[in-house]
Each structure stands twice: as structure tokens, then as C-alpha cells.
Image 1 (cartoon, helix red, strand yellow):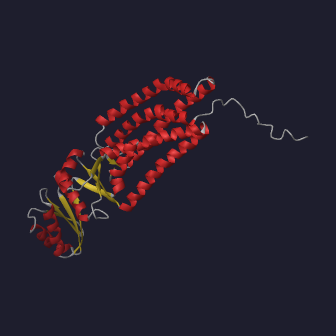
Image 2: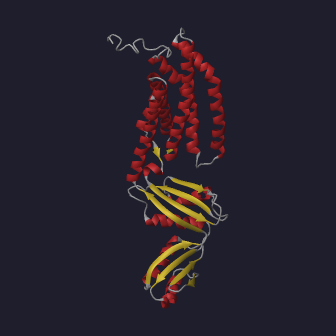
Image 3: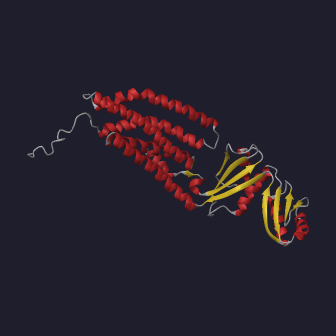
Length: 366
């Protein structure tokens, strides 16, 4: 715990976009999402921490392929620049060999031919489709982002233009959302509060269910689990985001489940073996529940290791936290919580009533 806490103080955590701030771009394409290809296409832009997740929904159509691209906040910027978002969208569209569609809202429909000529002066092989009061210019795949920007500038300079909207034929971007440093700071505080309240609620429940010594031992064991989990993420500099907070809360629930089972057997044996030393009762109780604890943890780890190996990059951090948490939660229930209970001592016999109970007013004459 000292090493883990020291690593946290010295190195800190490698916060993800949730806690650093950044931008989420939702993409929708007619082609299946290839996460590796998306990441390789964006790598030359040097955007820092980029997370790409394929989104699944049973209501999606067969040709509806959705992904979420999350980019960390750029240094010195409150939010990601519009030019950077344009570059990301164009890069992903170019990877899919999309044509660019420029929807030009024009003031005078008769100016359409002049605007097309201005566009063709920059990119000769552009074509057009016309509407009632607007113009759609089709830029074939292969044009560079610089050419596209020059083309839009040329159309604007030609006049009679209210606005220009850029879209692509093989990919669309339904939403672009940014998380600023203020919001990310609030998320950190909320995450800390969530873990702290969960631990306090467990303390209160165990106190009611058993005795205060059991509650303190269980909560200190949970604190041990949380500190070691945070410490391993700090030491290895694994990305720490909201998914890891969910893993921490799951670890707390899993660990307290094992601890309560051990403590329940301890309480039964304290009533059964009134003359035995507390250390012997604890040892007996742990041995009686050991096979159950180890088998539960082993079968859970089988599923988690499978997810870690086969689940892909999206959930790997979460699953790693769960694997680590199950291992340390198992041994903390056996070796930490029980040892703390031995140090604190415990009431030996709940069957004995308070000798003064019911005699408070026994001296008063009726």
C-alpha cells in the first residue's frame, strides 16, 4: 500500500479523456468499422490520446456502422479547434475513399454556374447537382484537404453565398461533443465521491449486520483493495477513465461479498466454540470457507481472462482492473480483514443478555 500510494503521489494517474477533457466525434458509415484502420489514419495528425470504439445497437440497420472517436483536449486549448475537427473528418472520409459533397446555400440560383466555374478553377473535375435554391458540388475522392479549403474559399469569394456545408457520401458525423477542463474536473470529484459513499454505505451496513469491529476490518480491507488498484494503474501508467471507476465499484462489491461470507462463518463459530481462542476461531472459519472463496474467484478469473485476451482494446483497461481486483480482493478477505478483526477483538457470545436488562427500575416500590 505504501508503494502504491507513493507511486500515485510521484507519478500520478494517466487520466483518459473523461478526466482530462476532450472531444467525442460520432461517425456513421456504410462500411464496417475497422478500429485499427481508423487509428492508423488518425495517427499522422498527432492528436495525443485517441480512443476509438465501435458502437453496437440491435436497432441499427445492416449498413449502419457507428463508431465513437474520442480525442484528448489539446494543450493550451479549452476545446479542440474547428480546423482540427475538419482534419479528422476529412482524414476518415479519405480513408474510406469518400466523395466530398459541398452543399452551397446561394442567394441567386442563376449564380450556380459561376460558382461551379470558381470551384473548377481549383479542382477541375468537380461536378454539380442543383436544387431549387442551392447548389451541391461533388468533389471526387483524392482531393487534398488544402484543395478542399481553397475550393470553399473560392466559392465564398465568388459571392451570392450564404453558407457552405461539407458532408461525405460514405461517412457522416452525426454529433461532435466537447468536454472542457471544468466538466472533467467535476467528473473526478464525482468519481471520488461515488467510491467514498460506496465504502461508507458498506461500513454502515456491516456495522448493523455484525459489530463495529467487523465493519472497521471490512472497510480497511476495501481501502486496501482500492489503493492497490489505483497504485497499479499509476505504476504502469494505464489509462484511467470512468470505466475504471466502474471497475473499482465492482471490485468493492466483489470483495465485500467474500469478506461477509468469512465474517458470517466467524460469527457462527464464535457462538459454537465459546472457549476457543479468537485466533483459532478465525483460522477455522477461514479454512471452512476457503474452498468456496477460491473456486468463486477462479471461475470469475476464467471469464475475465477470456475477456482480456479476446475482448479487444475497448474494454481491456476495465477487465485488467477487474482481474487485479479479484485477486487482491480474494486475499484481502482472508488475510487482511480477518487479521484486522483479530487486532480489534470481538464480542464472543451474542446469546448472553445484559445482566442489568429489565432491572433499571427494580428498586422502586410499587
